[in-house]
Structures are given as structure tokens and as C-alpha cells.
Amino acid sequence: MAHVHRLRHRGLRVLYQQFPGPLTSIALSVRAGARFDGRFPGIAHMAEHMLFQGTASLDQVALNRRAAELGGEHNADTGYENISLTFEVFNEDVPDALGLLAEQFYRSQVSEERFRKERRVVMDEIRGRMDDPLERLHSRAWGRFFRGSLSHPVWGSMQSLRLMRASDVAAFIRRHLTHPRSVLAVVGGIPLGEVREALRRHFDAGAPGSEPPVPRALFAPSGVLRLRGGGGQAYLTKMMAVAPVPRQLIAVGLALDLVGADPDSRLFQEIRERLGLGYDVAASLDWGGNWAVAMVSASAARGAVHRLQRAVEETCTRAADDGFAPDELLRARKKLRYRYASLAESRFDRALALAEGTLSGFPLPEEAERMVSQMPAAEIEAAWRSVLRGRTLTAVLAD
Image 1 (cartoon, one colour):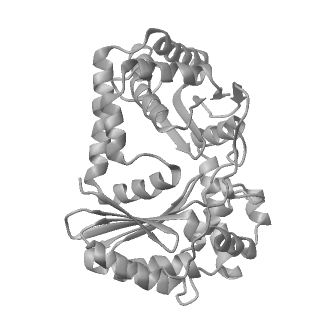
Image 2 (cartoon, helix red, strand yellow; image 1 turned 90 degrees about the horizontal axis):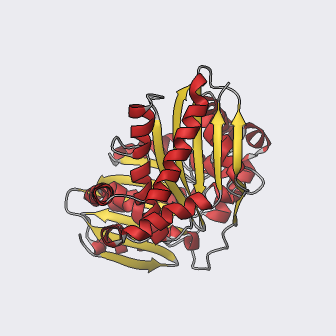
Image 3 (cartoon, rainbow, N blue to C red; image 1 turned 45 degrees about the vertical axis):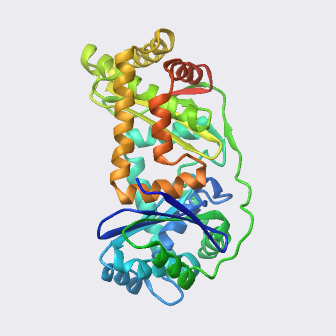
């Protein structure tokens, strides 16, 4: 894999990596996600939507037509940590693509008319999410597990959106879309010299400075949350706090592969194959600056909810007590190495990983892969025991 060049342009962190081929992927990530919402939960997500609703020189139609003229994939996403703008285009169109991203970054406008229209779109999105029982359970569990800046859904709430004004979103964009908060990653066939020239042309409106402090991540005490609903189905999510340092995250990720949702994993085999309780089994690991959480979830028929909860708890505890067999660890390492290898094969995923990983302090993918291959079994087992001993929440949705 080619060397990652790290540049600074007027305080903007820039990463460039050569990736042979006709395309280049661009990711512009800004530390302005939902944990920075403040008194308007959901305002970061709303700001992401408004970045596509027009700028000082391009209205909504012109902006999206310009993106289509470049022929690439032009999108954005908001999480708890970041708003990320992405663009994948032919190498010869990278300077113009960077120009369009700069237009959105520096000069987005938030008119009352466009804001009211887009707010209705987001409200409709929220209603759709809340109609999904698993999404509803996850949202309520997340809000109970965390306190403070992480305790609300990324999309906010109906009440917050109704109180929000166009001027609030415009102020959020001005305050947060700055060079010290941002990382630009460019991965593809465009030469480095052309990237430097495009930066000089398009990204000169920002200024250096110090990155502002990040709101604290606060956890609630351990416990059990029981909700009613779900119809004929019962849903369970178990959340576990993880120390947000790279080695611990990687160790827990390896353990989660063994305990979690793949067909060879213990939970899958216990819930689907041995007990025949349900179809859906899932596992994930989410993290950001100074927080991380591991999650396992499963579903079963309404009458089997107690058996489902017992199966999840006993499977997780048995893994902590007994550890992992050498053949299990070999499979987990290979699966995780495969994911990193797949990441290396995708310029789009790599650009996003470089930008977001730099903001969160996570190692480069090849550094993480080395950790996976060299990590002792005892460290992986200790990491899993530590998450079960730490803050946990088991949330159940059933009639």
C-alpha cells in the first residue's frame, strides 16, 4: 500500500494516498457530529441536510446539477462524532470536485424556505425510524446507557426540530465547519502536486486555530430496561462500555466476532441453531473520542423472551469464563484481517477511514491490521472480561 502523505493547509489537515486507477475518492470530515448538538438535539444532522440546499453562488438545483456534471458519487453522513462529505470522481475532475466541496464547506446558505422543507423531510425520516421496533429499542437503550451529549439519537427529536430555526442551523454551520475541526482525505490516481494546487485554489478561506474541547462522554449506571411493544416479536440489545483506546477496541472487536453474529459465532449457534429461538442476531462496535460501546442484539417470539435473555447472558459469560479456543481465534483474526484488506481495496472506504480515523485518533488500517495479527490471546480474553465487568445495559422490547 502506498505511503500516506500528511499535509497542513492553513490549519486544515490533509491526507493523500496514491491509489492506481481512473477514480479518486475524497472525504471531508468535520468534528461536528451529534455530540455537539447542544440545546437542539438533531441540529448536526439538520446541518448536513442543509449543506445540499444551496450556497452563496449555487441554489439547490445548480449545486446538485454541478455534482451530476462531474459524474461522481456525492453524499454526506452524520454520526455522533463527525459530519462527513464524500465525493468520488474521475481523476481529471478532482480539482472541480474539491471546488464544489469548498463551496459547501465555506458558503452554504440556510434560507427559511429551504429549511422548512428539509425539516419536514427529516421529520418523516424520524417517523419511519420509530415505526421500526428494533430501531425504537436501540434509540431508547442508547438514551439510557449514555448521559449528556451522547444520550439522544443522531437525528434528534420531533420537539427539538419544531423549536429549531434556520438561523440556529446557519450559526451551527459557521461555528463548526472550520479548518481546525476538519480533515480532508484524498485517495486515488490524481498526482499529489495537483492536489496541492487545488487546495491553494479552493481552500484558502479558512484559518488555522486550536481545536475546541469535545463534550464529555458520560455513562449511566448498569441496569435493565424493559419496554412494551414489538407485536408478536421480542427484541433484546445488550450494550457494554469499552475503554476507547485502539488496542482495547481491537481486542474487543476480535472477541465480539467470536461471541457475536456470524454463522460460526457462539451467539448465532446458541440462539438460531441449538435453541431455534429467532432469526436476527447482530453484533457491533461503535466508538468516538473518549467513548466506545460494544453491542449484541437478537430477537425471538414474544413468548420466548426470557429464554432469549438467558441465552445471551449465559453465552457472553461463558466466553469470559472459558476463554477462546485457538481455532476460534484463528478464524476471528482472519475475518478481521479480511475486513482491513477489503478496506485497502476500496478507495472510497479508505478515504473515509483516513479522514474519520484521524479525527478520532484511530491508527491507520495497516497499523490496526498489525495489531490484530500480533495480539496475544490472553489480551483478547481479558478485554472481553473487562467489558462484562464494566457498565452494561440489557434492553428488552416485548409485550
